[in-house]
Length: 447
Image (cartoon, rainbow, N blue to C red; front, side, top):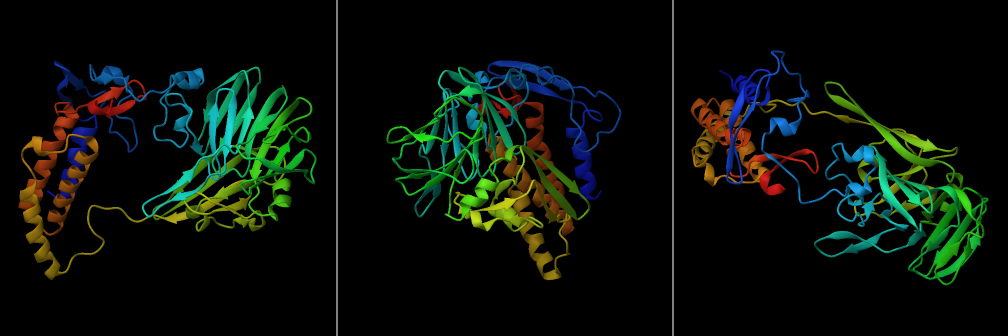
């Protein structure tokens, strides 16, 4: 039987409850419990279809636990606190533990704290072995008497809501040229910086202020209510009257940037829809930025976007911004589009190896297949390195099949099966459990 058919049969055996019955004993602590997934229907599962629509806590039996890496539900809107939360997302620092660590938006880093929002234009910190973003409190906006919660997110943005003495909405959007705080009630704006303010000038547009700091940076600050800020002490700015609406801050990368920034001051990004349409050999990507207000939208593109964006309108007068991922370039427009070629995926190589190479591959693959351990205790106990070992064994089986070494192929497939079954049945030393904190599957040691 061709290996591709064997792989499909294994996938059906282990991955589809509609065609197979997976059972086994799982161990949690000193207790052992029988865990089984019964077939729900005889309908064949489609690619991407959920394994089970049942409550995972029911399917997993007693293999349930709460992660010690806590989501702070007080920092989440009640609607979001009961749904699965994205792990390793770029804004995760807002909701983990105290939620007081910065998130990286590019070009800015932002801390959303109770009673304040802090904006940083990071500077480079590097050695021979690393490059990092140095944090400094460039601007802190006072939100005294208010607490914050994450109320919405999408693929490119997260929105924080402040409630209390002041009501405000903070749309944090990847690539936004301005950092924005929208005041929903009349509030006296108070901004402070760790730097000394050495110059404050009114801009050419109503409500705009140009501020020079003693670290050499210049910032444009615009108030939607057309209020011009005035200096307060060595390191503070304040509105002379309470105001409502957006307060926007942008680092001025070059003096020629100010007119372009002013023309974009009223177009506020609040999120974005990401779409992917794939055909056999290509994929079309698009980001449709959601915008509040009129005007030209300016967004920063990462280096990997810059070479791919189609028909981008680059606004180089704004200059460029530093980031740890490379230099950011500013594009104008509410929609980004690009395409990528999709490499064909199969179980074998694109071309058959030569006779000379086939002979050598036969020799090596036989050695590798025999070296695959039969003792399960010799395998890595964690899912990451176990997954690497499993993938290596599967690759050995594929190579053996391609060079017609059925003995080595069958040996490698047998090892893959023997290794994988305990993970599926929960009888390995580090079984998968349902994490009630992040609502997903992790290993027991990962709690």
